[in-house]
Image (tube, rainbow, N blue to C red):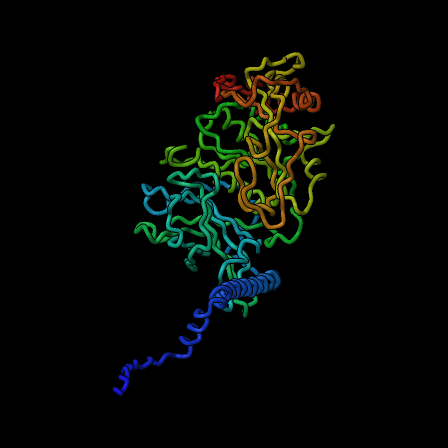
Length: 515
């Protein structure tokens, strides 16, 4: 027999593999493991991420708790000294305040004012070097390009005209209502920190802004005085004053002298102690009225002259959002007021309860966790026929808006739509035209219901907002009629003794539709 042929078999050596590779291969080589093992890995990864985030948030909570406990203790323990104590003597009148250029004027960077803010809610998230803790901040109001390089902005502090320090800004923000224009009302915040080993911290007198991206702005040139609380520097005690009123910038030769007098007298009757008016352009008659009330200590007139912008295409009109925010910080920090009303000269906040002033209403409804009181608006348009039947025979100034206009739109607009408000300055961080944009944590807006109060808007020169649907409303006339007639009559006789009459202003009833 022929022997069987044996087929030769060739062998290939197996490459050595590391243990991790063998482990992974074993995992994926089995169908059951491939099916459920991958799912298990995904679940394990998700659980790991959740655990990591929980640990991270726990650490953040511990850090926040440490900050909340440490900063107040440090602020209370450190002695704050002022470089020039004489600057704190008496109330700041605002006479030194005016717009200053930052660097070359043609760059259109401008600075207006600065305020010390001791609220720790502002600085609690700002980083500080080891061995230092913040005890407050300085908030600077300016006009800056909307797309400015924020990391290149620095605060420059000095005391007694001696340069002290330069710090990179901790926050640079545009006020919300900027509409993405080229320039924006802005605020810059720089913290003030002290060495924890020292018992004393020195407060700067003045501050300027510098901007590294522009050669003409790298050196600080335009310094503004920092405003501090006159006595209670850390705002530990209750405000010493009650109600201030902020009015947006006067512009285009504002001419309604009689309306201004009626406005001042109405709000005085409702508890207002101080008015802040930003004057860019007004007629000589209105200037005369403002000087009269300024001499009486009732009004602060702020210089608001500045040019170089195309309003409503490059910058919101007349820089109003710098004015509104500067105003409530001025009233709160420098003035010591608890409440600040944000209104225009044709807007009167009216509490509808019988014989209750605006201040009394605010005090009745106030709570520690309220940051503002928002009033819905109704309109007394100039197209509605005025009623002169209640004009006293002895009145020299017969056209008082609150007394001869008694027809208004029936339905109030919704809150935040053309509404106006009263804010509590210590609870607010950023103010808008119709409502508060930013407030301290755990506070809220009180939306004033119609049966408690309204914004009475006596509008001239434009028309809209459901003007066909009207109702008769004599409540302001009935409550303040005789008193406001007498007060306005007396003031106009003092201001314009030759005629005893305050000018109404040209075209005060000219109306154009905005619908």
